[in-house]
Amino acid sequence: MPEIKPHHVAAWRDQLLGQGLANSSIVRKMTVPRSLFSYLQTYGYVGANPAHSDFVAAPAVPRDGKTLGLTPEDYRRLLDAPSTDTPTGIRDRAILAVFTYTGCRVGELTRLRVGDYLQTGGHRILNIRGKGGKERRIPLHAEAVERLEAWLEKADIRYERPTAMFRPPMTSRRAGRDGFVTRFLTRRAIQSLVENYVDGLGLDPHVTVHSLRVTALTTAGERGSDIIDLQDFAGHAGPRTTLTYIRSRHRLRSRRRNVEQ
Image (cartoon, rainbow, N blue to C red; front, side, top):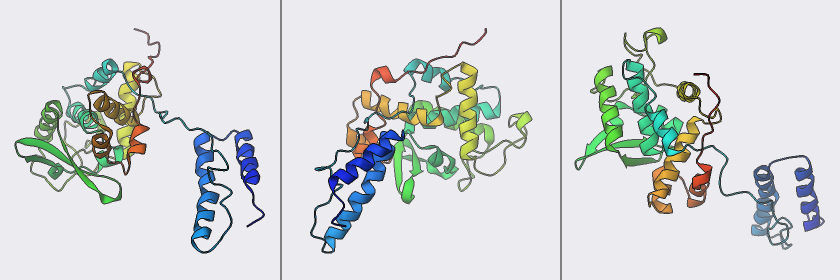
């Protein structure tokens, strides 16, 4: 171990850069030797940590993430894209509203049960189960309440509290007119429905379901929420993760494709 010096670590870093790895990937790799030497120091190793940032600088990683966000105008178009004439359209309107007003992860949305929609102190809330089984309760905007109420009424599942909130139609061609299967929608199904609406509106194809979470957190930040509130809202373990979701106004864009009218 003593023969490993900071210049060896720096050379390895430069080699990774030369191979075209992303800065974020290199930073993750550099944490391995740094953590190893920290561990060894805990158990008696008296040498310096050659991978410590005091000796070897890690490549810069922009705090602003890469996921494309939506402008308020395009987000509104997306929110209103599902039809109100079909049961699946009413379901999809509720799904998009939950993403918009809770900033939840797609996995969290797929796990929602009817019983997670609650009333407390005169407010409607959603009980969201996040990573590691942690739960958080998020008060709902009036539009989200209206759309959830419409979905529960149309699907006739209001009192099926232990069952899936959002579920697939019995047959896709009937768009839910013949009812819904009592099982949870999959992540892939949610991703596909968002992709279909994005494509139908001619939005940038790089807009994904994760873009909805990014836009929700950015919008909440612009409206005055502090970073700790945003961290709780997002269900993040620390504020540094939350900061990677916040876009400046010029990063909230969704270029449109040329669509023949």
